[in-house]
Length: 600
Image (tube, rainbow, N blue to C red):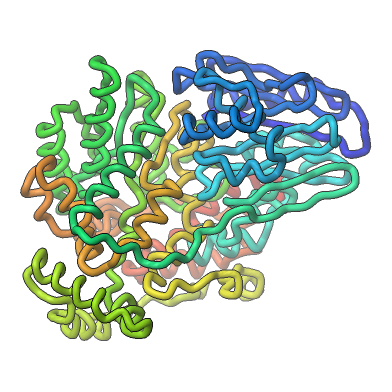
């Protein structure tokens, strides 16, 4: 998780060396191991390095090939062996010791913009091509790595840290009201191309950017494909394919002797921990994996300590439990180290993240997180059955139903009517649009661009879960810009190869209760965990906290009034406990504005 920054003066003017150094120094918490800047007339790059792999011990950035192309990158390149072979076949001189940024540069030299068709991993980078006098930037497929930029007059700036760009006097602090409206309505900015600030944009996931004196363009290079279901003759082939993929994606992301894993008492993270432990010990007898788990001991009913503890014992890995019961509303939000770069709505959360990452830092620099299967394995059996009937694949459907009956002891239709009745009877009592928001904001808030969304024939819900803006907030939450610690969180399930596979696995029988994962780890994880149903939190921690602690006193910042009516907010906070989460959004925004309102 290195820090990157770049400045390009499109008019050919010289770079402000002191500004570039100041911006680079602001990224020190991302990369404590090295700090370098490079200036090339009208172009300047800065980089701070965090070593997380064996190859990165040889890394120095910004780096160049023959003085013609330069790169500053926050990148981890996967499928390295295959890429190295492809580059060698293209005549490039690379080896197994080549660093990830060097591989990206060689790929760019070999295939220009089409290099992105060969790159796999999590990356955010800028390449200056002196031959063509242009800047080429890109962000990975799912947007795990952030990329922000600003184009003000003839100056183009980019970084993977929003606060870094705000150091430039050319970038104003004027807020983007549409992003604020989205925050107040949905918790997050719904537009993947913008930020909270008018002058700072975000390069969306799966896009690249080209900037020169003559042009400025942004293009999508990848979108999640809509593919046919995958059919194997043997049920065991699905298990083998899944395990092979999981081992591959974990192996690509470990590349270290010490690592941690966020491990709840659920299926996805425990399967991830088991795989990491297996691969790590095969790689090095001294491999050190530790689990970290958030738990509630008394505030609300919570079983995570029990199930996570069982798994840690079974896998023989140490586990650190962080109780959440005692955290107060907006605890320590006034401290500089807890100030987020953009508004966040986690009334009980910022101090939680800070304290956990402070615990992790002495042990490792790489953490694994198990998000992905809950989204990719929605049990959409009705859509799937309709699709097979519509396409005259009745024999496939009969085979899947037989497997379903064999593994689950019933056919999908049983219980579906009961579930449907329960859905019809449950309607939210909360307003979709809060009455405290200024009416003019409703006109500028983002609305989903349905025209740009491809429809999946048999996995519409799962496919829709991978729209870019739905993931930016998750990845941002683990970014050092929010945590303040140089720890890189990696997501083995959020891999192009894995997600494409999970979306093509027949929902019947494999998606029911994520049976594919349960069946794959039946001889590895504790039986009680494998039999455990998906259990959402049985009580809202926010409401539980409100019963024992008064809501915080807050003084509306002068800039808040343009967005909400604080008096209405206070009235609802007193009278509508069920709407606490929604009605605290203006309070969360107020904390942010109080620290940043000078630029409004």
